[in-house]
Image (cartoon, rainbow over all chains, first blue to last red; front, side, top):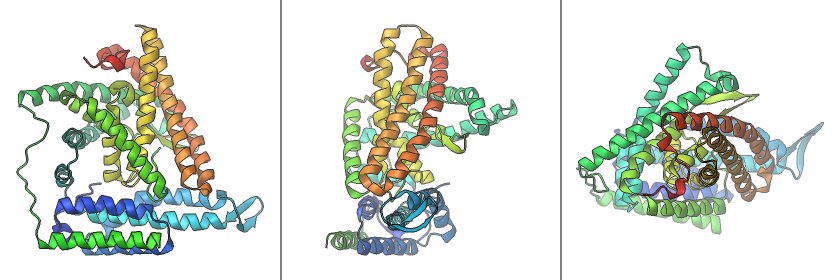
Length: 249
Length: 208
């Protein structure tokens, strides 16, 4: 599942300068995940929905992004309803449906959907590499950034390798779903992955040194903000201000 | 072991980010440039291994490998785990952006503990491979339990009504601890056989 599959569409959110967008994303995600008053939660959810609508991302894509968090909620909410304690709304034998559980469940669900919508709106509208480049301009330490860039690249490589290793193991009769009985074989896959990656990292380090790596990657991309970017950022700041005001009122 | 979006309250989110930032800064101050690829590949391997789900009883668990990453990398494991967790959130919405700080703490603290345990006891074990593997297995299992304990603590801090869920979650991780212990033992035993320089005992003094 590629988060940046629709990064090349055209919309006001796509056009926003990546540096402002990434900064706004972090602040808004943190503030939206932190609020707890009803007014602020509703405003955060509305804002996130507006952002996704503005971004013109396909509905199917946004729904697919929501799927994993919703699956976790579906698992957690029934548990929460019956274990929260406090005043019971409804009882059946030893089962009690708690009022506090219901309120918390609604709050968690709204917050989770809000934050994931924000995430889709902000990070679905720019390439991952562009976002990392923007982090460089936002003064994230170069070493950390280099680690992030390399990790992103190797994840794709190892997903492929892991697929091959598992295919090879399956051909010998291995089944991941067998769980504990095939644990030794699973460990074997992990060993191969770790040792190979470790050896590869040695070669990469040498190659980097030979090419005169100075701690950061040169890039031809330069960001240039215009009036619209500044307006967008003022709107984002106003949005954060509104949420904080509703929360602290 | 990840905490997903929407569950934590503001103090825990901010505290988690503060603690993760501290750990990250500490790790960054010790990293040399030629270690970057090694940290990144371990981060990627951590990310990929977490996709190995399998059934234990009625529930399904996936490997966390935090302990192993700690044993192989030492202090820089914080950076590998942070990178792996960030991309798990970005690519699979596993975990989340608001919970990235807390999740980093949940994985990094156990990783560092496993590393301390392995390098401390491993030196005593000397060259005996089986003993060192057993220590690594125990350290991996302990890492899962410590991670689960941190999850329990942050869920409790976020709201009393989450207590029930927190305990159920910890229970599920007792099973995972067992699995990770076995995987840690087998993996370290085989690494010691084919590539012993990858995990020397006395890792903390490895900076040469």
